Image 1 (tube, rainbow, N blue to C red):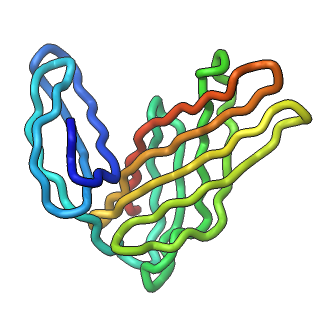
Image 2: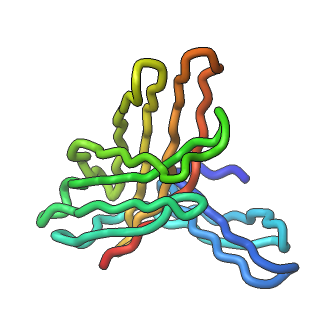
Length: 166
């Protein structure tokens, strides 16, 4: 699939040619078709829009990791962003996914992006990046984790997220 400057795209397909859900947000109005394991899904994307201000969001990343954050009263920043994420490209996932806290992120044209880094002892570090787009009371995008473990190759793993205003 190719879109003009996509911000994010996630798809969930279940069953054989049955239920499919696709959420895509890109700059500008773009239409397209995405192939899903259970068939073909046609969709229309939307450009980012300002989120409702003074609102809490919660949702999931990839296999069900949690994401939570607040939008400031004037809808100019993402505050208190907490992401649970565990990359598995360097081995099995942890029993409990580590959580990553971000500094305040600026919302520009309905989009936000940021990175945070954590170290876990002397041999492990992770840099987590988030790219998100708002469309009304829904935020969607991608979270990626670049893991550096002494004695293992550096690896990066990414998963889509969707969070809704509560």
